[in-house]
Image 1 (cartoon, each protein chain N blue to C red):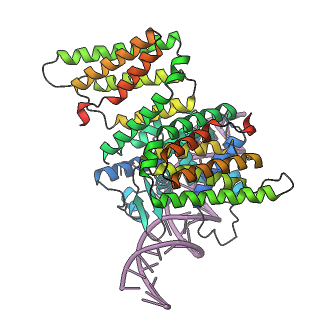
Image 2 (cartoon, chains in turn yellow, orange, cyan, blue):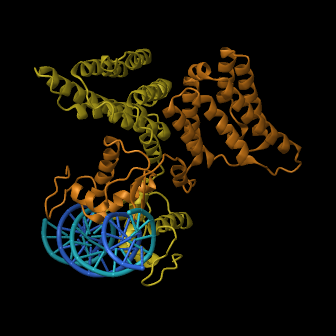
Image 3 (cartoon, rainbow over the protein chains, first blue to last red):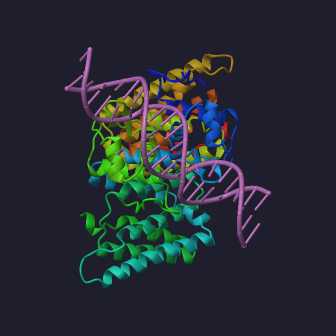
Length: 243
Length: 243
DNA sequence: AAATATTTGTCCGTATGTATC
DNA sequence: TGATACATACGGACAAATATT
């Protein structure tokens, strides 16, 4: 309503309409003390309430959605989301993408520090379900590696899937800490690597599988020292691919 | 084009279209190495290129805009934006309603791990200019603390400035590592704290100043062991405020 | 279990404000 | 000044997903 909208003439030099709506919706959430799980009014209701077209409203909603504030589902409505920092770190690192070589070593350094730093916490909080998930991720990596080693030509298959399984492995491992900030950062750092590490080579695969097998073995044995050693080995061996 | 879109039937359970477009556009920017100031193709061109409607494309564009990646202007086009973190943090602002205690301890844990993990690197790369900057930040903290200790009433003055000086101190310290990923993360983590830690108490100020004095003294003496000790002290002492 | 209603997802067409040449 | 290119904004229509009766 603060749009001061005239029937056929839109606001001249004012802030874009969808941004005004974006702000108004955030205010609405705060004012009405909506909590995660609560629903916003339907799109049509908000259109009449705010006096804007559905199109503009949806642009605002999608902006809220990409920010992780709400999520919309057909047949249900628009639901307030739990606070999470994924959006923040994801965009932060995306914007830094550029010099791939330098970035790669930097992200690796950050990952190394964080993962080794939260080693104990991850070990302590790891549940039986987490362990099963880890084994699943490992299994995927093993299968893809086998398929690739069979191949005579150097054509790589399922490279993206292998990489994703690797990422999922580490995310599962540190999601157990319950530290959402940490999870966000690790997730973002992996996504950041994504662009640089797309061409995975079979020899790298073999090494990677072996490393993760060691980690899982240590976790199954509930041997923290072995786990620590396996993780250090994971981060301290240099891949031939990047020499 | 990867949408595998049929004329009248959309992808069933796949990711929402506007999100696919959002990702594809980000990839497009990276792949074509578009820099700030460069323009994306026009909306209509991208619609035909990606095979989606104008509406969906705009939802993706607006999401990119709220992310600070592009900005669109009528009569001009869609322009790649300079990297800027302000808007990212602005989005978090509204969300201070959650259980801030948990979040605070999580951010602190991440900061602790990162800063202690990159201790050696920061120490090695610290220049004379950095040291002067650190002293400036410390001085600001000292002055504000003095002003507050003079006051009889418990009214806090310049709390925000004190906190900012603290943040700048740590950012300067680890900017010297040259690891931009690390710098960004530390900056972001501080920003997360910002909204929870707004009510700084005078006793906390005194302690904080003392800690940073120790750090600066160690750095001036070029004594790594003392630096290490001071940083550990910094992170291992619990503030009374949060007990 | 099945039909119906609700709600978001996606598309199209049209008019208007804005910047550039 | 005018012409052109572009994003902004509106409205209507149907499809798809979910909830409800």
